[in-house]
Image 1 (cartoon, rainbow, N blue to C red):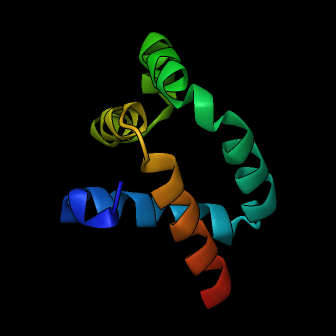
Image 2 (tube, rainbow, N blue to C red):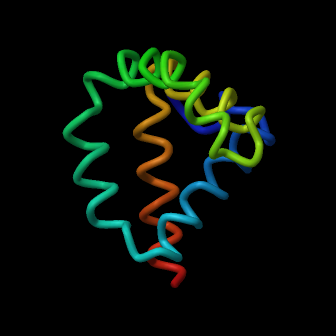
Length: 92
């Protein structure tokens, strides 16, 4: 899935998420986890829906959480997110 199939808002959301991971210096564990879980990304998005009531109490913006859930349910989003992570890491 090329990045041009994502809207600007979706691209911005993934960039914000990647930037947060890089700032916390969790890039390597995140890449390892995402690469190993690529085949299960849809199942992961469904788990996010299941845990939404719990996460909603901790997450400051539930709308962004829902957008991330929707993005993860689409095929190819993980690859795009991994490329954003790598670009953010190189920019640091």
